[in-house]
Amino acid sequence: TAARVLAPLTENEQSFWEAANYVLALLSVVALGVVSNVRRKQEAPIALMPPEEVGYAGRGAGRREPSQTKEPSQTREPSRTREPSRTRGEVK
Image (cartoon, rainbow, N blue to C red; front, side, top):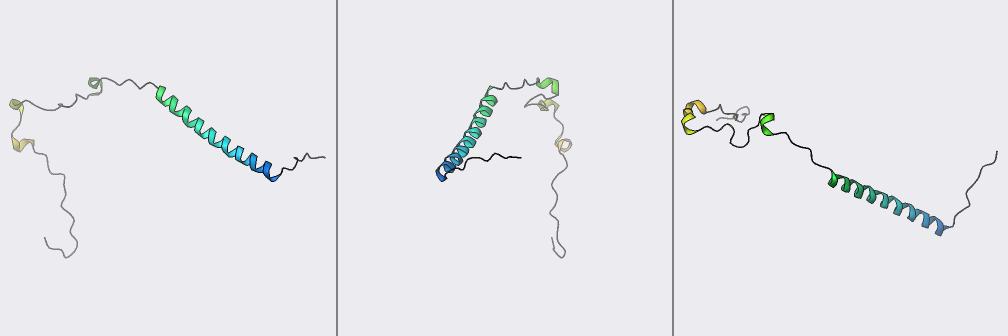
């Protein structure tokens, strides 16, 4: 069987095709970036559900009128901070 072999290239021709290959690759990456950016800017935002439907009442939610407030001793939550752990032999 016969095999076709490409005609040998000179060093200048090899350099030309190598540079052309790099330029084509760079232009392809730039084109993908431009297309992606254009598509992202043209995309319509998703419509949000009204806060009432998801159970969120907004910034003053949970605030009570002064007449509805509880005594200070009833409104305190237990502290969520922990004491730092002590190492052996450390005295407080």
